[in-house]
Amino acid sequence: MVMDRKEYIKKMEEKLRDTTTYMKIDKDPTMEIKKELASQLQELLKEEIIDKNLHRQLYPNTTQIPRAYGSPKIHKEG
Image (cartoon, rainbow, N blue to C red; front, side, top):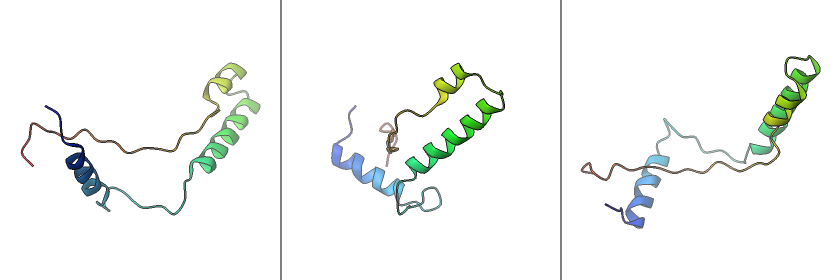
C-alpha cells in the first residue's frame, strides 16, 4: 500500500511540531560539528591513540545537512 504524498507531509509536519522530541534551531550547526570532530580527531592522532589510516577514515571530508524522513505505519488506523 502506498501513502498519498499530501497525507505523508501532513503526518511528518505533525511529528516535527512535537517540541518534546524536536527543537527548532536558528542556524545549521553542521560546520561547527565538523570542525569540532576534526579537532578531536587531530588530538587523538597527535596523542597516538589512533593511527593515520583510522584518522583518514573518520575525518569528515564532506558534509550534508540532516534530513527528516519518516516511515508511517500505513497498516494502522490514524
